[in-house]
Length: 295
Image 1 (cartoon, helix red, strand yellow):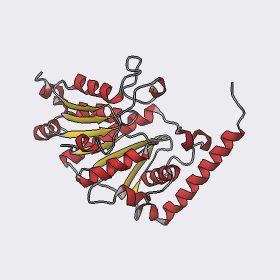
Image 2: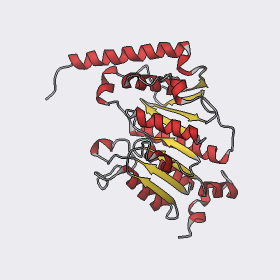
Image 3: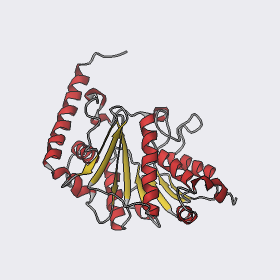
């Protein structure tokens, strides 16, 4: 014990001693500890964030190996939040880590957000109800939420502040909206840069079976970006550019797009994108249906 100052001394110069102490005493909540969340946790632990609240009901499996920080032969079958909690303690034995190896719901969300300064959304894309609960609850408690997504070869990210648009209004969700439409509206609202659309193969995306391609190198690129935004939210080194601002960088096409999305999905251009994504998914269904069976 007592190695904190030496462990994070190389941060000094980019942050001050006082700012490092702020990170040491900051609590960050990460909902979902897999492809996005696991990398965020590790990056923030190495930045010297000293308190974590981690939640994930899932366990590691071999299908996670291409992109999830905590996935290894030694962790297959272990809960993701528990594993990432161990990784945090391995980086900073003094860290205060709360682990919830269960789903977020009305019964668990309050304790999960207790004392938290920033929330990171690492929830599986195909679990929209937990995401909506997280954003609604964080907003009620006036906690900012940072989200990122490895979309194709793109890293896309946004910051949601309590005084800004709500997720529900920005995406245009309604209480009785079908899950597939919720997913379409969410992905269109959070990746308006669209740098990935030119090369994504529709047949590789199957919302009905919760399948979409992802690449570990892109997830790793995203981890550093999102974690850096969290550090800035805590330290306030520069002004925060929150939703309706959006950001997307594509390493394949080498495009960086950022802007201000007026009216969210009510924007006429967004409505066209929603229609376009719906057509892409329908095309993907036809392509999969006509593909020859494989042994």
